[in-house]
Length: 640
Image (cartoon, rainbow, N blue to C red; front, top):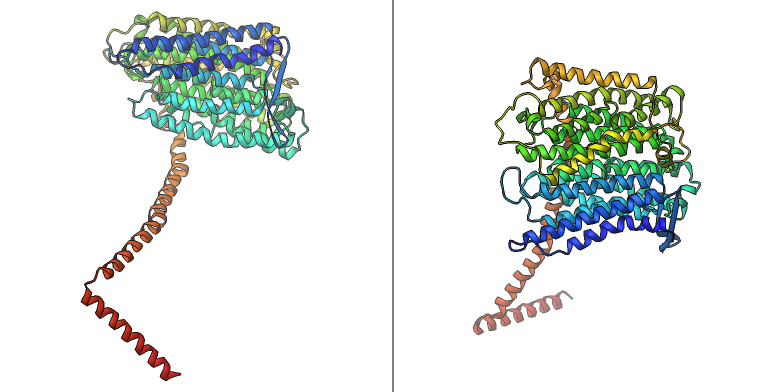
């Protein structure tokens, strides 16, 4: 085993060990709470920092690609291997995952110490919380470096379990357990398809090794079916239409967990999985067409829903849904490097935005922007960091999101106008037009969020809002650097070459970042969206710019009521079926068992009462029986 592949194996192992040891820590009772918190925080931070160092070392030492595998188990001729598959894209994504995980671990030390409404420790369950973050990080890194589909599936499923535990962490919130269950069940629906797709590919190739699966000549029907099944899992994990409904409700979890899920794990896993298996999707244009439709609908749905939200975290949650739509749209038009480039910049600015939002919530004690305002003077560091994050989200040059989003739009434009890429031309038109509309909408709601949170006068009296303490402030400040500058890496040949190494044979545009006339239309739409929100706010700073939506606002706020549709078509029938099954079990199955028991007890009781009869009554009974038997015998004899 080479040093490079050893680093690849260590990458998920380091946070895994930290997580497992953290789970073994004793409960932090009243007497040992502080010591348990310190030990848990130390393990969590050390695990994330160690993983980041390994990821950086891997990025520096990896030249081209590397792979190492050993057969783990052979299931009737189907080999399952234990090993890694490394390339430049995997190394860059690993650095992003570990950097965000480290920021979240450090930030959580301060965020979960004090509650936003009181001076009491929010969390006496901090040790399992820190350990679960480490396990979550390890699971995502396993997905990143895995060289076998079964191993990738293990990381995929562990992420789902950890997301359930972390979203439900604050059990004082009644909505947290329900949101965790919803996230678990909705993503499980997609994971069924993902599992079947992996099984189909493994049986077709005779192996689950990714190299073998990619090299095998699959039948067209098998390949298309497998890719469509994989897309079901992508829709669930990456919150794409129609399995997107869990993500906004997941905001019931602690804000650092929202940053972790939205920025570099979970929702990014689906995008990365498609890019990892890109040659299969490239040969299945039907699957790419489905992915393009799914991406376009999700992009617009998330952006429109974000325009009408009052909750600070839900605005960011719907923006994640929309931005993941840009990434899957880039995949649909045949440009995995553009998708991965936007994934990396999104990891930086979305982690920044969620941690900055956590600082605001921590200071003011509410998540509703209608109760904020005027925080620019009292929270200057948080304000400037949020401005950088929202600027990158909106695609304001020269911030990172401008260059990566432009890469997606140029790839879609090239597919639409010149037929580049493996998908049908209409897919390029759909993704390009949806992306352009999304640019204006994103600039509008990002500007609205900034104005309502930090400008104007406070709408409610707030108790001395201030910038967060150093343990929370420094992760936010440091994340502002890649959120502002990472997009410029798209001009570097080495960076672009590493991203392309994960998807050879790209049919899209050659550059990741661009300077040319194709920038003008997205930039004009960005400025127009921001100007409309600003002009509406200027007319009446006390009013919400979303009032301009008129009667559409409730519809957008409820995301076109798709959650209600899902509840009506899926949840209610399932609950009704469950009630029928329960009633049948209790009345028919249990009733038969209980009834037969009661009948046996009754019969036994009757026979027992006869056996307990007094002697005269027993003698009379015997005599009567003998007479009846004799009479019957006589009648039978006469008849004969």
